[in-house]
Image 1 (spheres, rainbow, N blue to C red):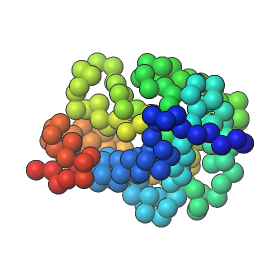
Image 2 (image 1 turned 90 degrees about the vertical axis):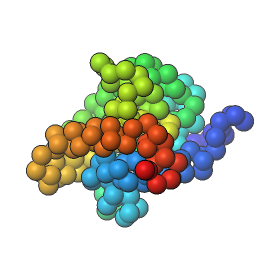
Image 3 (image 1 turned 30 degrees about the vertical axis):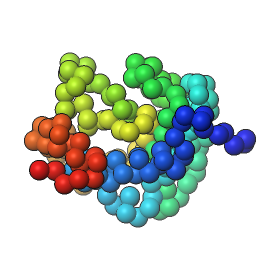
Amino acid sequence: MPVRRPRPSAPSDAVVVEATRAWVERAVIGLNLCPFAKAVQVQGRVRYAVSRARDPEGLLQDLLDELRALAAADPALTETTLLIHPEVLGDFADYNDFLDVADAALEALGLDGTLQVASFHPRYRFDGLDEDAIEQHTNRSPYPMLHLLREASIDAAVAAFPDPAAIVERNLETLRRLGPEGLRRVLAGEAAR
């Protein structure tokens, strides 16, 4: 596979991964938005993959490659993959449309029911909420990304947590309590006040 180099204005893979890793550690784990994330992060079982695709077709190919790789990987070594794509699907509507393509890719590979794709984007928007609502940040990440997860891991996590629906409510309350300035401080690595 040829090496794809970022455009001169695009951040390097190292910068993309570091920003994403910081977000995972400060927001996802630090705010306990996902109570299941800490163990796999600490154990080094999260794969951070950067796609240099510049169009949806290139991203689809990278997604197919990463889905195959995750399905073949030993879960003790790679539990989950964050496929970060800083150069394509920056528009949330286009990204949201691509999620149907991602689901079709799972089916085409026969991995539907084995893996699943979760969505994170810097401009993530839930229907019915103002674009600037703090609640939007439950799914906002530094760069557009597709989170590839094992269904078995999700099932085990849900079975271990007595009320998975409470996670969503707790996350919303955490973000509301922090407010925009508190969240900014957390994401910047400062202590929230």
